Amino acid sequence: MSSIAAASGVARPSAASRWLSLETFVLGGAILSLVILVVLPVASLVVASLWSEDGVTLAYYERALTGGSYLRALGNSLTLGAWVGLISVIVGVPLAWAVSRTNVPGKPLIQATATLSYLSPPFLTSIAFVNLFSPNAGIINVLLRDVLGLGITFDIFTMSGLVFVTALHTFPFVYLLASSALQSVDASYEEAAQILGASKIRTALTITAPLVAPAILSGTLLAFVNAIALFGSQAIIGLPGRIVTLPTRIYALFDYPPQYGLAAALSLLFVAITVIALYLQRMFLARRSYVTLGGKGARSQLVDLGPWRWVLFGVCVLVCLFAVVMPFASLIAVSLSKSWGLDFWQSLTLDNYRFILFEYDVTRRAILNSLVLATIAATACVALGAIIGWIDVRTKMPGRRLLDYASLVPLGLPGIVMAVALLQFWLSVPYIVLYGTFAILLLAYIGRYVPLGVRAANSSLRQVDPSLEEAAHILGASWGHTMREITLPLIRPGLLAGWLLVFVPVVQELSASILLFSSGTITLAVAVYNLYETGYIEPVSALAMVNMTIIVVAMLIAHRLGAGRKTVSDDSSTSFGGAR
Image (cartoon, rainbow, N blue to C red; front, side):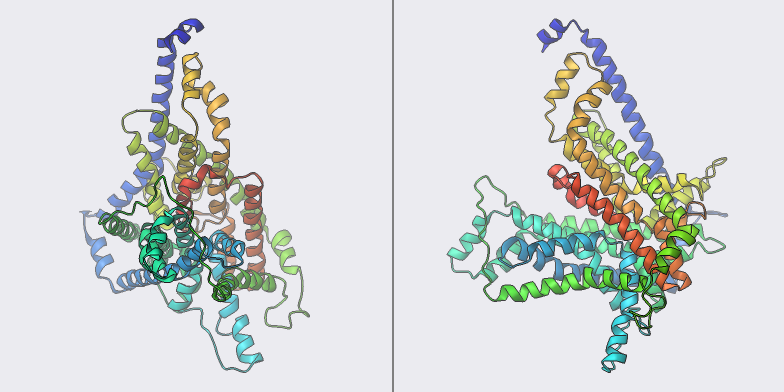
């Protein structure tokens, strides 16, 4: 290397000093960004929960842990999370096993169902199921009661209804992680069990299932955390049924006069639940080894289910029907009706779309705001993620691991907690007014979703041979020139994937936006929720379909540009962070 440098006539100390200077500057900027986005807001949350006008106090925690309404909210949240986690396993694991290890037909249908179930905003799915199973005017209830005369009425506004709708959004966590794990398990373990006389079903239950337990447990944890944090579903389905949860209770504390200290204490209780769940998962997994990948692993033979494959296929179709077909069909049908409940063909109209797109001025403002905010937030997350990823993968700077870990902290912060933290911090900063501005929404979005940008950049950088950058360094290229001409072009597909992984959830984000928006900064998700609260279900359904159309178009662009390449496959689980 020294001969190359000498031949080039470049003074290496000068080049090295430039790189060192840039590295220090970049590291400082990245640390400062994370401090502003994550550390200071969370710290202010802790301070607010311990401070009152009389000084240091534990009164807020005492109220949170002893007040009847708060304990009921906590109990409802834990009940919801536990049942949703269990149902996600019951649905997700068999589907993953069917796709990965059996000859069940219709595998693309199962994969598409899982993808669409995850991408569909939970609050829109909740609105759709209200259209279907509202006790008085729900499509299914009207059909069963008034048309067929069966006298059966389903009530969606119950804990079981909330669990059902939430699980339709969370089962893909278990499915995707379990499916990936099943494809990675060394098939020789299963073959050995069958050689020793174990049946295929017994092998699946006693050999395969324990080996993929870490993936199943991780998916269950994601399902649990997302379930207790979903504000939209709990507000739309829970509140009419008098089911108060932690997110809706925290939201209610911001009615005038706002109770910031109590909201902070409940928010930290939220974080504590997440931390405890993560600790229990790690403690369980630490008890034994789950290593199954080896250099001589064989491809597993598909299990021939015989006629039972059609039974399993029927179950898959049923999941698709409830998770995708019925919600979308109900939103489309209601959005095309003058007044839902009348004869559908006689009341068929496009007036709701005309009203939403051309007469309801909030729509255009909300769409523009959401697209602008999502574009800026996604770009910022990818840029910051690329810097943090480069520091972690390409340098040996002290504190780089801590920086990487700090960037992942927002994965454990529900949106409403992030919103409370930002409010607590920025309301305490003198001379700077961010509440009700685009800036505070951007800070919330970037803070919540920067882990996706970091993971996308990190995995992409690990696939690029560092010798290419080292050669440019030796030849005297600056850090900026090397990044622009060599590194960024090579990791562009991964960065694009990360950009889209941020863009889509920002467009449908509700949990943080509902506390931070103003009339001028209203987003599309908030517009749907606010319009829903007025009771005009037909325009709401039309606006919901506009929302879904934007998301589908974004995902089609992602598919067209190859954003789903393996550049982020190793870290695919992180794309599910953050409840909406």
